[in-house]
Amino acid sequence: MSLTNGRRLCRLADIPDGEAKGFTVETAAGTRGILVDRDGDIARGYVNSCPHIGSPLDWAPDRFIAPDGFHLLCATHGALFRPQDGYCVSGPCAGDSLARVAITVVADDVILGE
Image (cartoon, rainbow, N blue to C red; front, top):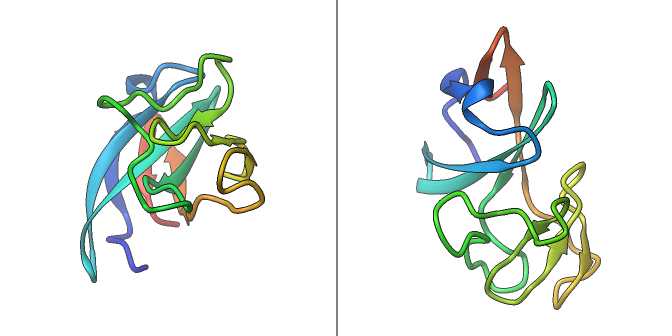
């Protein structure tokens, strides 16, 4: 999937530490939802689509974190994903992973692409 590289999404401070935020971006194939997970000064991006059936993970805007306060949660089927690598540790897609999106942090800006 080709994303518009170099696009500023937000300031890192706009994403509370330990939380995630959703964005809509343009790709060669059309509009796509992504999420950016923050862990301190680290931001990681994933396509906002569960590998099980392709539904968005969030049940409400920017609601990606499981009740355990750690894992990313698919609200449709309860799948849990490690935020470090998007690997599904529990649920109907266990063993699969979220599709990674290249994200960099420059100063306090979260930038889409490398």
